[in-house]
Image (cartoon, rainbow, N blue to C red; front, side, top):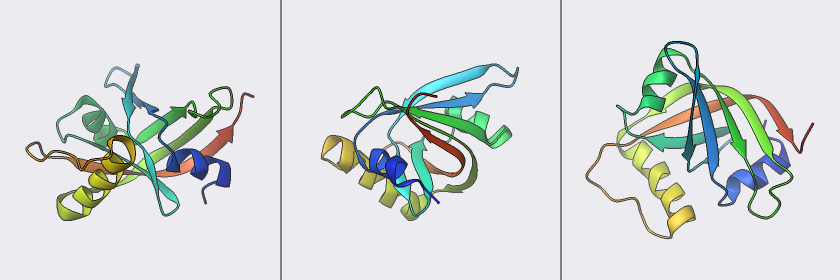
Length: 127
């Protein structure tokens, strides 16, 4: 279950930084649009992007979010990708996230997939 304070941040427009594991074991980070999807967390990417390739090989990940309204109360989530969505199911989420962040649907032309993260640890604030 998502902590209500974590959900509040996920429902806002703060950019998350996603950390994944490269094949050599080193970390890889990238900014992503993020949101809640039930009690899970979603972001989208291209199927051939480094983060997608990393997560298909090793589903462990972490998200770090500095809320726009209080960046000194960061949200950190650790979990794993438990599902990948494509097609219409993915585009529904892609457009929802794009509308939240940009006010317009995501442009078509490039294939997009959605990663669904099951959170295993959630924390709010430094500590």
